[in-house]
Image (cartoon, rainbow, N blue to C red; front, side, top):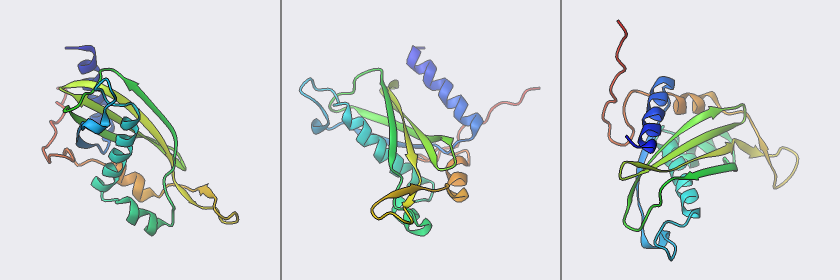
Length: 176
């Protein structure tokens, strides 16, 4: 097993133990995603992180536009982003992105993303978002507010199924 496959397998075990809600999507690398060297321009991964975040919320039954209206928030602004690149992705590659919330705070949360290409870990990254409402006294300003328990519950729960395929994940073996 390569170093990247071992790391990915370890992450999957940790996710099962923590019972995180995980969403998976496929991303096809198009010509316009690449730089002159025919590899993905790094900023496109951050665009895909955003796409994965929206897909994660939708898969949990929390479409962002409806969620913002129902909870009186104006958005989930990004306040921090990180990425580690392991192997390049090229035009025509099919990437498998896996995303989940890995940390909850009172008014913010961290979403982790892993992108696989041909079974190898291509990139891993994280984003910190803040749950934000309009500032009560300052026009055109935002203020962080506590995350609703419903959001935390839905993005933390799992029913043992992959969100992309509906295939049941294998259960951990019981110790005798």
